[in-house]
Structures are given as structure tokens and as C-alpha cells.
Length: 382
Image 1 (cartoon, rainbow, N blue to C red):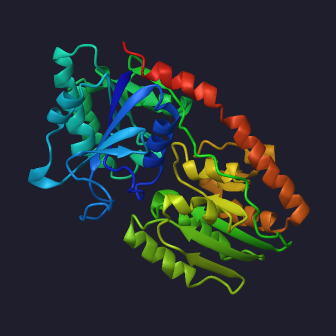
Image 2 (tube, rainbow, N blue to C red):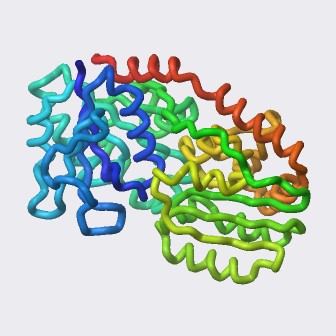
Image 3 (tube, rainbow, N blue to C red):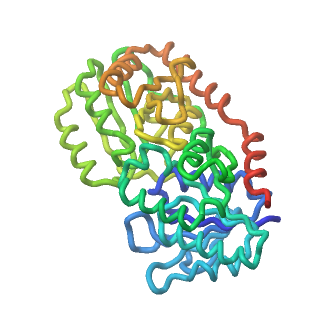
């Protein structure tokens, strides 16, 4: 059985890093019968120093009988990356992300060194949306310098790239050239049970958002749209605060909302309570500025929640499928209020049809067999 050694800053029971953890967990659950997975990550949650509960630090931990996870301690006590690669002797080193010194750059350097002796090693790099235009616009000067160094060292030619869709493949080619080796393998989503949403009354709407609180997820656009909504709207917001200054601005604007709108912030959401959270609202809203996959978007569809999002996410033209609204990210101020009011105007019968359309769209978009074939190609040794 081929072994895959994964490097990423965080893994369960950490969950505040959002989609990338979910992507890895879903992939491992689906493919653990074919590959032996090892994961190296931090021993703490995002933004915290204390170790996660229930883990053994600086040791291999069993995760769901599907993978072995090494939770590294920080600082001087951190076990060297090269030592871990030598210990596992993997068939594939899978690097999740680009910019992390300890979990992207150092593993890449160590893996390239290991490959000098073990030439059969395959090194796979998954940018996870970090090459999307919206993501590159954040801290753009530092990222430009990073890519100049990356190309000067010719690292982009020494690895195999994992793109989750055609769009990400194009971003990789645009950044590193057409000679780069790329395989497209979509993300494994988590399928939820279709839930019984609260009874839908015309003129009323219960929205939900599950996402990191950051400018990229664009919560403030929802708040601004709610300012002029004529419907009665309740908005449940879940997710850890990644950018405190941004959330402070959101809170100020929330305080200005009219009496027909109510916002409840619940904080971070433990994945084991995900289904329960989706059961509480009728429509999922997340007008992201950029989204590589959007696990929450796909989970919403699987749970029968119509979605309001933007054309910078993978969900294009939701109106065509009667499963919500895909809005132009550049014209949100003109369209988002309209979309919310349109969903609020649905009665129970119309909402049920839209809910069923969301479930059907999920089933049309996701093929487990096709995903398995894609990952077999991705992890095929050169």
C-alpha cells in the first residue's frame, strides 16, 4: 500500500482553519482503504498555544483508524521535518498550502533533499485556492517576493501540482507556466442529511452562514444588504474570528440594522454540531470574494439549503438550477438585497421546490467514483 505523508498546520481535533482541514479529512476517509495516510501538524488550534485535548504530543496518534497524526510541539522541542520524512519513508509527500514556513516550505525543502536518494518519491503541492486572484490580493507585496524566490529555485518544476478544478489549474499555469505538471482532483465534500428547515412563511427568512470571520468571506456585504431589506430576516452566523478588526467593523454595522433584521453570532462551530446548525436555518448565504471549493456551500446544498453566493465560488448560475442565487461579486451592492428579499418572498411550497433543487444539484455535481479515479491519477508514481 502506498503511503502518503501530509503536511499542514492544523488537523482535527483542531477545526478553526476551516476548509483545508475538512478537505484533508474527507479525502482520508474516502481513500484510507487504498493509501496509508500520515499527517504532520501543529499540536494547537489556530491562534492558540495550549495543546489540543486528547492528543499525544510529539508522537503518532491514531485518527479514526484511517490515519496516523503527528502533533508537533512548537519551538525548540519541534521534531525536525527531515527526521519525520526519513521515519515514514513515504511514497508521496503531500504539501497542503504554500506560505507556511514549518508546514509548506520546510517540508518541500526536506522532501526535495530526500528525493535525491529516493528518486521514486512524488512530491505533490496543493495550493488550496491561494493562487486565486482574490487570495493573491491579500498581502500582495510579500506574496510577489515569495513567488520570485520559488521560481528562482525552480521548485515549481520539481513538484506535481494538485488543482481542485480547471480554474485552479489555469491559475497554476498563469503563475508558473504551461510546463508545470498538474492533475485535477476535486475536493471530497461532506454530505449532510437533508434537514427539515423551519416552516417558511412569506415575507420572512432565516439565513445562515458558517465561515471564518474574515474579509474574504465578505460578511459585511450581507450586513449592508440587510440594511435595506423589506423582509423580516434572522441571520445565524457561525465561525471563529480570524480578523478581529474586521469583525469589530461588522459589529458596528450590525448595531445599525433596522428592527426587521436580527443577527445572532454563535462563535466557532465544532464539526460534530454541523448538521444541527444547518437544521436551524432555511437559506445559506456566503458572498465570498474568492473560494477554492467552499465546503460549506456544498454541505448546504446536500442539506437542502438554497444558496446565495458569488461568481467567484465554484457554484455558477444557481438561478438556472432554481437552487439559489449566484451574484456578480463586483455588483453585490446592487443585487444582494434583491436576492435576500426574493428568497424571503417564497411560501412553504415554493421553498420546498427550491430545497429539492439544491439537493438535486449536489447529486449532479458530485461523483464519488470520478473523484476516486482523479486521486488515483494524482497519487500515481511518476
